[in-house]
Image 1 (tube, rainbow, N blue to C red):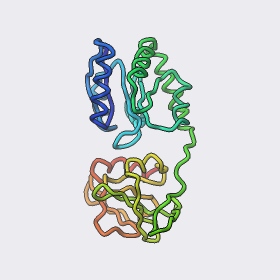
Image 2 (cartoon, rainbow, N blue to C red):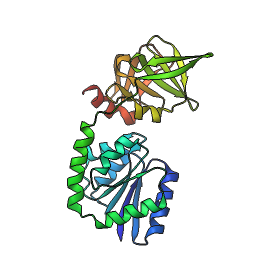
Image 3 (cartoon, helix red, strand yellow):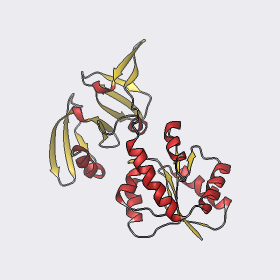
Length: 252
């Protein structure tokens, strides 16, 4: 049996992927489904190495490339991605395969056929090359956001943004001058178009700019309180799950 680990944060997509795999071949065994960087690292650190990993690039707690910085994966990896063509070209330079969402059954079958032909050492070498390539890649992040102001349109420079927040499934941009604008983009999507050097997702509700932080208070080992400017109406706390990553982000 070929042991497969699926890393996908959208449960319907994970289940559909599992069904397609089992339909393609009866010799696949899904040994685990993980939905985040944290859970994936925890599972892989148990020492149970799969024969194949199907890995979504964009997870709820960040880009899945972070997994490879915390644990060694010595088996072949097939990425699933909604990234633009420039990112896909990076994968085409290496023998690690990718699938563009929504995943097509025939393309998945071809990827599996390719997997069966790849030996372990080749994948390990290609991953090192790919990691180097991606780290050197200069991504173009959003420079400005177009927002509605009454019957007019207004462009807000990214450098003038203090933070983004969500409430009741709606997202808002707060500029450094205190003005707030509604956005059509979710915080999950915003994370993929903003520079991770300048912005950090401190919780499900807030994605903040480093320049907006005016004071950091340590409430406990796992709780951090922030004073932002302009000040939100509610207390701003870094989620417990993000505290460690937040500390590392501050210490870059």
